[in-house]
Length: 62
Image (cartoon, rainbow, N blue to C red; front, side, top):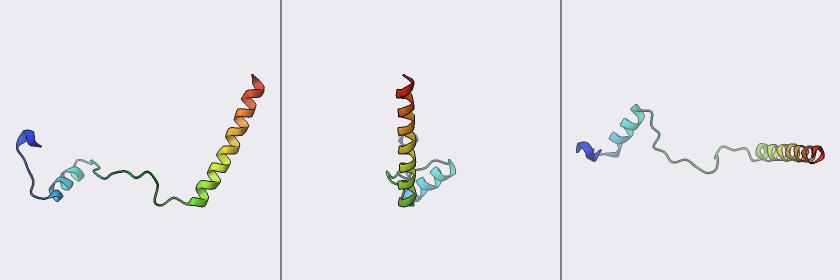
């Protein structure tokens, strides 16, 4: 913005510009705050079983 010597007096003006341009200015989080701990554990268990089965098959094929 300094290229055009435009300075807004409030941050809300920047937020409005970002919103109009469909640009997100919010930081991402490492963890999903809405995550279901039980569902995540069940999926990890299911995927672990799947991966072990796949690894076992590929060792047998070689």
